[in-house]
Image 1 (tube, rainbow, N blue to C red):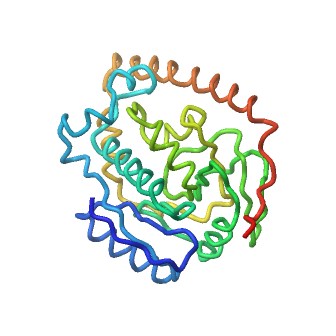
Image 2: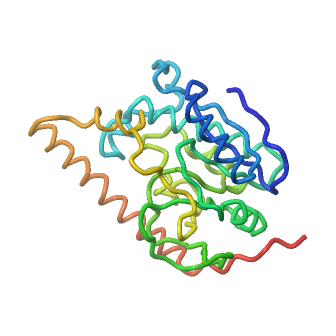
Image 3: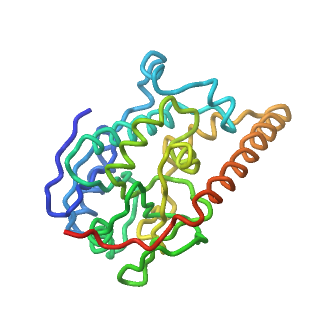
Amino acid sequence: MEEHEPDGALIWPIYVISLPRELGRRAATESAMAALGLPFGFFDAVDGKTLRDSDIADFYDPEKNQRLFKRPMSAPEIGCYMSHFALWKRIAADNAPGAVVLEDDFDADAALPGLLREISRLDIGNRLVKLHSEKFVSGKSLADLPGGYQLIDPFSVPGQTLGYVISREAAANLAEKALPFGRPVDMDLKHWWELDISILILQPSVLHIPPAPPKSSIELSREATKPDGEAGMANRLVRNLRYQLPYRVGLFKARWKTRAKASKIETKKN
């Protein structure tokens, strides 16, 4: 993968995962980041449309998918996970204590630069901090940030990976434990206890999905993998139930084990 180094103006580097062929998205990202005054680098995404079976054999496990998820993963979803995984490996091998990871289809509030600086000064430990959630997230507040923002230890982690801050320790754990995968990356992160990390949510969200965006290749591919007809709907229902019950049980057990461990996050000592 071609990688472009972000400069060191922020304490932690910023990477934007983007397909090299998506020139429009890249131009929009460059404009948005320039307006925010944020240095960044593109991290070339894996193009799921070009993947062959031999390319994904060491990454995606269809049998694990059949056991653990609601439907087969599409090629763009597999490519998306492979992209995040490659970047986790990169972050784990770097000297920086962590990094900011963005996908190339975001809108950002003007508060983003200041919040990234604040979060990078905190001792987030073995954690990933999501910068976006579609809905209000219930949980315990672990840190107050300027502008009324908070870091929340959520009862349940929302989906999507539009943007997040990740420590080097958490990236190393993800790089070690994620393979082979059987769920999309955002669904795997909802099962954080399996990956030996914790996840916090920045609330309110500082990143947003653009209004009425065209459907992404991942969204279109997800629709295409849904079986049609009554038999298909019945199969989807069974697999969804088989997915939801273990998730709820696993979440309850993980929350019970960690309920007393989540404490206020302090600024790192120099």
